[in-house]
Length: 558
Image (tube, rainbow, N blue to C red):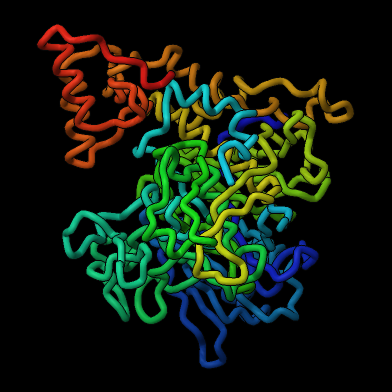
């Protein structure tokens, strides 16, 4: 098992048209980190289009390699990346030679080859009973202790996520700093279209407005980091589209839903108008109430590492706690690695898929020490045939799930994929369980949560002869993990989880039901009448118990 060191590797995605495309470095570009003592710089082009920076030796290299782009990746609010630039030059120039030359320059802290990244899903063709992975991880038992907190935000860096999917929409993070019309939300129901849409009162086309001052315009639910932050063509809409490479399409719906689909819910008849076969059925997520921050990256092909840098920078600034990365590649980009090192120090927990190449070869970002590398296992705890393995793997999780998605033939309709397989699903299972664990102790650190996840895993080496010590600490166990922070479940009626039944629980339920406050955790402890609902009847029941000698709260979790 790889050792955890104090660094956080950074990566990036690239949507590709075929899984057999090149796995080497991206031609015609590198990333560099200019030493901070030489900042700021203001690169400008010469008459010949070659970039000059005012750093003599760097400018000589720019001329030698015909560098026509020297573009700053993020603003200076995150010191770790304030010197990060992407350099572009003709594809005919030897990218390894360019990398070597800039790596040796006195003004450059490090240089990195950027790599192609691929979504780690094995393509395949209703719902909790079919989601064997949740039972295997003992999620139903863990849900007696916690259902997950809205305070835990999971950023899904992927090919876009459908904020309008009926089984995702109520768990989509909404950036109220961009709520220009002041109605308390950035997503709303459009009865004319029978679908959830970005709040028209908050979208300021054509160029957007940066209402929250984070240098991204109209970032209502996240952002499309393939596009400009503001101005013409800006990335206001980060949901997937049918014109992107096939492996991306609804991949981000599936990863988001595996981690944190809305659970114990149903789709209304109006919502079902946009669902496949008018279905009202739903699937469960590992964490019921954690929020999903959308970060779209991946295509077009020429965009790679800088998109992930921007997404991670955004996650830190906007309060994400967990980042899920269900994609990988073979290139170890040192510039990305360094950025992830600093992001880990900021307290984020990173989770990434190990890949589906039936290989021991490390895949990145999973193989970075500060990232939890997740391999895939079957229902019998045997390593999935396609899953990668190795000393760089940290933990395993189920390799298949029924997940939200889109109809591939009618992409505007929302569906589910019951045949989805790959470590792309294993990773968000871990991210979702991590959210459950963190919800039990919001003061815990990312290192605390990671240690609990790995130390509480079920040992599976006996089921995997030949792969001993190559599947991390074992297969994740949600029940044992949450019990590390919350050894006992809250008693019935303890809506605010302080282990006492008092007026505080009444106030908590009133706030939840009438003022959109956070739900009881777990939700079922608020069901004092044991009728399967948390409503005004439970408030009346608690008041009667506390002040009129009524019966004690019933166990709504049994």
